[in-house]
Image 1 (cartoon, one colour):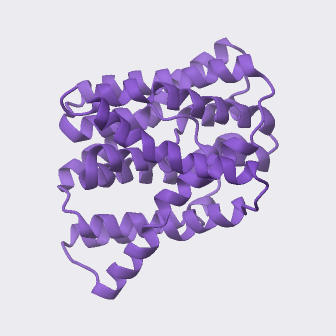
Image 2 (cartoon, helix red, strand yellow):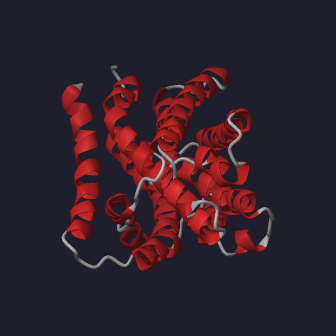
Length: 294
């Protein structure tokens, strides 16, 4: 079991370390370009190519999508209550609790821990998180909702096209499959390296608040994942993916929203950083809990 856990953690940690030391050496890393490349091209292609290559039962797909949506809503209710009690600004901190880092950190873990089936289910969770993260998450931070945000999200179109092929039980031409597969393969390593770069650049302003909110994100995520899996009767690989993705740290795009709408970006950055470090420290226990045979 220890070797299995190490085989999952080591690639994630080492790839992030590449990005971290890349910045510390003073080398150039164009984060806006890489992030745009991943979100506009890499992630949509990864979603499409993965579901075209892997046979996934549609009931499992619907179950995971529903569970991811339920988890997001539960995160919102729990976090909103805690933030209200602690008298913290909802617009600043609620998105950090509702939307875990299911992309940069979650997807590699899903693949390494559970293989292709895990990646497909992890991507299902990722799709729900991205569609609502870049619409509802942006709306919470900005204080207004815009349907234009949906139309600007390439992941949304990737989901629609992918579902069209899945529900009609059809396959794309081989040249499309090969192209999207090549482009999709850049996504996971670039996400991990970009995460390491972000960790090297983020600074912590309020360590007590960041530590408390980081603990809330990871602890709440784990608890909600376990409870929802039991309530929804989700078992096997799907159960592991639901718990794993739900227990991820604060998503980096929460920081991007904070910058865009001037919602204490320095403090949000600190929470992203501390929650990610905390997640690395608790990852062995999390994997021990969700991996088969644990």
